[in-house]
Length: 254
Image 1 (cartoon, rainbow, N blue to C red):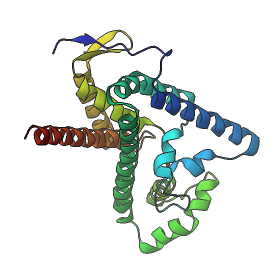
Image 2 (image 1 turned 180 degrees about the vertical axis):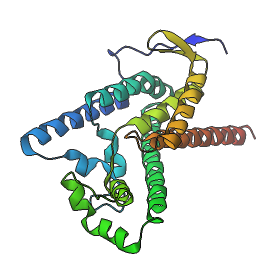
Image 3 (image 1 turned 90 degrees about the vertical axis):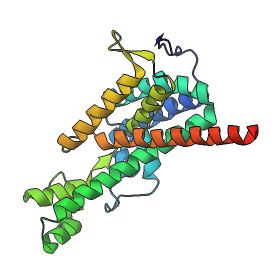
């Protein structure tokens, strides 16, 4: 396949799903600041993804967390990537298939993040007594709400894991990045608008960076494993669609 310089369509034309996702993300970002300033309501507490042991956990958060962002730079880069890669993928797949892919990768990212937190919780609990764990369950949430934590390092870490919130469309966006790399592997992406790199290598390098960061920088505020989760679920879904499409062709030819 010949090399292609990748150039996304302009902002003048946006396919319907990408356009509505951009609008929804912008709306919730604005609502977060308006409600926080006017009514002292933290929308992330309601719509961000909480660990299932948290009093604030709700099932709908597996979807709603994708529309929440913590800063302008957070939403800007996610929405830029959504426009850049999502527009091409929606045109290639069609609105329905693209929306299914976006939602599945976003939910898949949340499931992987929940699994990683569960493993971390279990590892911390192994080094605490039953009384200490019970104390975290009983009074940890109230401390966390007041901006405080336990003086015991492990109890504090457990309380943080119980009450941390995951927000952002990054998991679904990394799924889009994976899909673009698989569908258009030799298209050139320009890093910092200057350095050309083939999409397939960009995806591989970015995935490796996320894996390394997730393992060695587990204490950071970035949900690296959620990013990987979006890529993993995207990879599985694309393979499933490819196998299903091949099966249909074979049945038709028989």
